[in-house]
Image 1: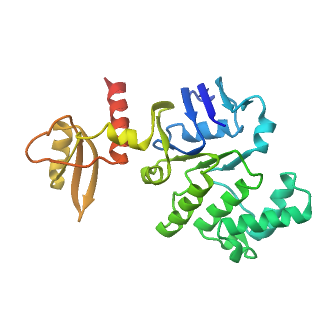
Image 2: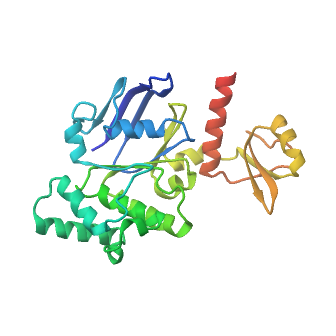
Length: 295
């Protein structure tokens, strides 16, 4: 059951064009939606999740019209927004049970087994009696996935799920998402390139409301082979190199700037070839679009 988005557009009353003729084909599995903050990712997620209307275009989940059959879509949708609230003085077990009732699971025995299974799946069973106000950020995110899985969804949307998590919690969360994505359409919206690199078999890059690229991480990397060059420089050389070369990213190693340049050939003898990674693909794509806009 693929999710097919065709020519989707959305402009807010303040004039901001959040989505500009967006088209995507999203199959079963983990799909990464990469883009900087303000790129339109959350607007797209909210529209797919039936939380806002589109101005134009269509979204089909298999044979289901997402924009017209909202109630039916919500029955098979799991959604973890970027920020979600919990009742701090309620335990995970009690709140999951309550949410399951709201989802229409009225059989008490069935509900109890479901809640138990979800708590085990998200590694929260040992903390089931603890009030949610005492949960860490990662535990709250895992609880968010537990509530998103209540109705065995066919489509799951997670918006910036690992932002602010420590490395251990991030790994737990990504492993959980990877397991879920084996039989479900899972859209991972993020600005963290490593999340997509580690999880997703398909991806798209969105910027200023437009889809700049849809491909697989492997194909994206293949297109960058032999085009990324690296160099360690002094701090006061950075601006000069930016003016002279197509610098797509900069990082620091032991406090010293290291730049990556996108070029079909070696910029000069001081540069060395670098194995391209998904971050290079991302920054090159965004940089190329920015140059086209200003040209």
